Amino acid sequence: MHLASAAEVVRLEVVEQDGEYRAEIEAYLAAPLLAVWSRLGDYTRFDRISPSIIESEVVTQLDEDSVRVRTLAEACILYFCKTLRQVQTVQRWPQYLMTASVDPAESDFKVGHALWRLDPAGDGTRLRFKAMMRPAFWVPPLIGPWSIKRGLSDEMTQSIRNLERLSGGRRQ
Image 1 (tube, rainbow, N blue to C red):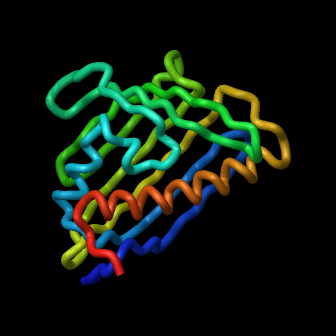
Image 2 (cartoon, one colour; image 1 turned 135 degrees about the vertical axis):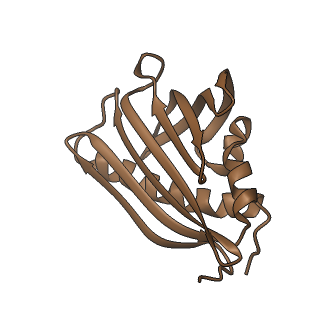
């Protein structure tokens, strides 16, 4: 049993291969599982969790557990920034599992998938997140992949901290 006292990133990995980016994070949040689950389902407020998201909205409610969500995010490589649009179908499953799939026709990504899994961890929450994406825009060789990997790592760490804070978690 793990008693979380503040957001703790246990594992963080971002890799790039042939233009495809994969990211994984495992973290413990000092916040109740139901509060974290509720925040992850507040699609219109993703901007409060992720520092790169400028805007988010529900485009269509597909059914009780599925929605199409549109986000605008700002990504920068050195001093060059780009606003990225993304439309995803987000599905919430029992046992605190959530998946998202990018619609390439309405996004700046050729493909993208994400998976969130929450588990109780003492008085806190264990969060595991995996994502894969392939940008549909040109990424400059050499510095581009390095910059994207660094940006994703920083964003995921900050998003975990924000999610914990917004979910009523304790701070050290």
